[in-house]
Image (cartoon, rainbow, N blue to C red; front, side):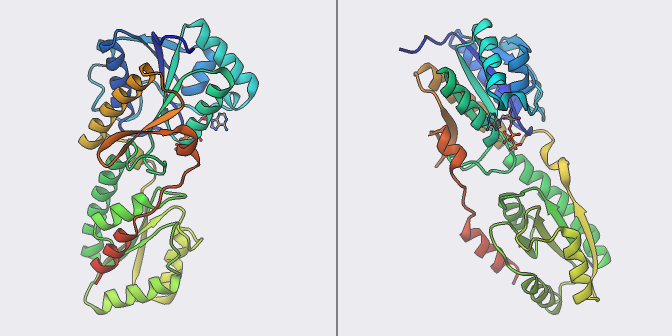
Amino acid sequence: MSKKIERIGVMTSGGDSPGMNAAIRSVVRTCAYHKLECVGIYRGYQGLIEGDFKTLDARSVNNIINKGGTILKSARSKEFRTREGRDIAFKMAKEKGLDALVVIGGDGSFTGAMIFSQENDFPVMGIPGTIDNDIYGTSSTLGYDTALNTVVEAIDKIRDTASSHNRLFFVEVMGRDVGHIALNAGVGAGAEEILIPEEDLGKERLIESLKRSRASGKSSSIVVVAEGDKTGENVFDLKYYVEENLPEYEVRVSVLGHMQRGGSPSCWDRVLASRMGVKAVESLLDGKTNYMVGIKDSMMALTPIDQAVKGKTDIDLELLRVSDIMTT
Ligand code: ATP
């Protein structure tokens, strides 16, 4: 019989994403609503090992819903990957009277939570916080929508200069293993081509497409490239390849980088974070453990955390087709 839950720890772990603060706020306030104590754990698992804790009440999360990053800081902890490290973390959790843990992070953080929970019979609940939208069991992760808006806004600005100078721009966006950001932001920003890790369109096809685009009267073009694009070449190699094959094009590269992870969360991410925080705490109170909270068909849904970690998200093939049609 598991222990009654009276004190919940909350942490952010792995890469930060917009909406993490809104999720912390939601967890804290849901705890306050149900008369539970909430303890903020700083710097992810490293803070758990070191006992870097602070009790958070409803007022301590005022004015953070609109802030990017995470007030609890995030970190990657090598020590937590070892059994010894996790044993210290468990001792610390017990010393501070924690009964359960809400981990806001990506699949690595969930793997850590799952192992920790199994080794110590300790209740955990995951909230997916990553801009990549690469977690199985949710149609949207926290920060993804904000990142899409950031990327579209950046590409809109790049388009201004591309069209003024009749240039071709390669814009590299985040997504080492998945092309969700590239595909959605690419369609949203009206890119002529979108190169993603899931599909190998081939460099030849890119050249053909750019030729067609020019022949149809377009004087400038935007090509969105995910970091992990299947051509296997980085965005600068692609630039040189196009310049060799289409000397009439003046090609520029823009790598958007970490700016995609920052900024004030969109309304969607704030609402999603608020819903996920409530669901996470109330699911723990219902005796559930080792789940990730997600959104499916507009409803909150729980997915066993091992499935969330192992499962793959699929690219939207219909959107690929839409993208093709839009480049006509
Ligand atoms: P991002 O999406 O930004 O990569 P993430 O949560 O996947 O976020 P990771 O760096 O992979 O980020 O993991 C965060 C932390 O989770 C690690 O620093 C480590 O402390 C813990 N962790 C990851 N994998 C394991 C594992 N196999 N065993 C124990 N702990 C792990």
